[in-house]
Image 1 (tube, rainbow, N blue to C red):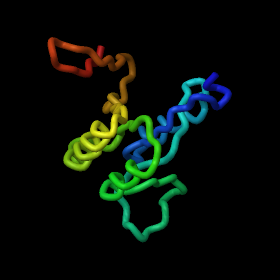
Image 2: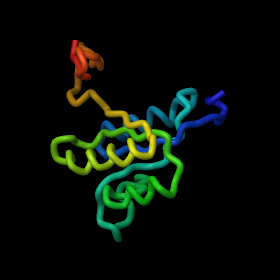
Image 3: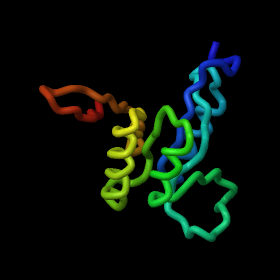
Image 4: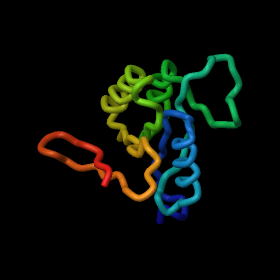
Length: 130
């Protein structure tokens, strides 16, 4: 059903690093997942043209207006949490208020043998490498 372009979920990706681009490439190559990639959210100069041909929707400051005037079902975050913590926190807060699902890319390290699994330990969500 979704592979034929019906009942698609519109997603935006926060960040434009290699992991973010690999995720977008995967989503575009697998229509059966049911996602329609709308574009990236990342900081840039307001007057600068999009870099590297990337589909930049908005920077962090513009994203609130974008969310209010466009349909968005999910946001996937790949931006570095340490350096962008406050900005990503604001995106999550805004998305939550609008009922938009937020997902986080959870493989911060290139694993050769292990795999990363998200688990619930008590009432805390953790990412485990095993």
